[in-house]
Length: 291
Image (cartoon, rainbow, N blue to C red; front, side, top):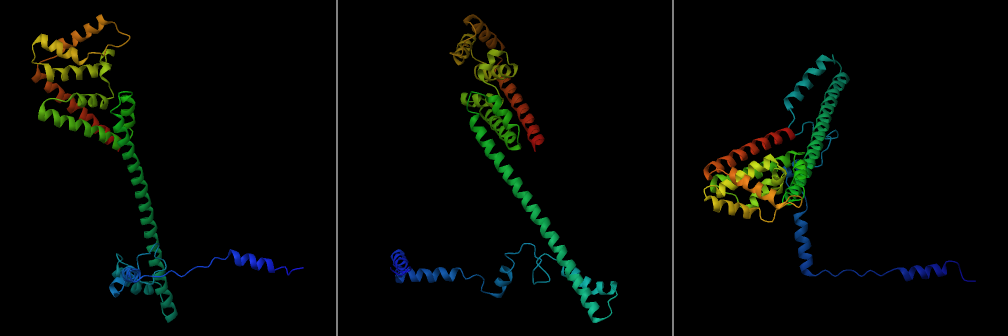
């Protein structure tokens, strides 16, 4: 019978891998030496005094009696006054009084560190919340281009200061555009309707807000055109938008009423500006309320 350990020794020897020593090239050696010189830490006395505080947390175990930002004059005053207040007469009593001063000093330092740590944590939590709201507002801002549910998107934007600020910036940008060019591109009008939580087709549901805006915007473009040309141009804007639940006669009557309500171009531009000013004011209130 073979010795019980013989097979085990051979098996372990088979599993043991021989590690070859890595050959370092001269270039690798020089690179290691260069990197090593860059990571030796502080070298000068001044650098060492600064770096010794890098890992401070509660500062209870600090060997320094005074840390940066602390009042050295106050500590010296306590060292002078406390022994007198405590009635220390013997050397041991004075030593205990000095010890009490330093223990109280360290205790106050620890409380300040706890307060600072709590404040840092609160700031970090608030920043994470704000960053999350900003990302959500950015995502919802992209959804404003969809015609599916602008009212739902606007409701979600109103839930955070960042979302309200996004709407405020949208209205402000449109106001700058109308002030400079006195006209909005059609894509900008669609974006405007969506920022209001509306759609152009809401015009056919007797929505007064979208009706007022559409009348003003149509007037800002076609307000000074001859009647026939104005009717044709506005009709082309709504071409193909006949709701499935509305007959052609009612649709045409509604378009005719819309055309009749369109004022001159100058008056219509002023209306658009006043509507935008009101939207900006309301958005500003929303930002303040959500903050």
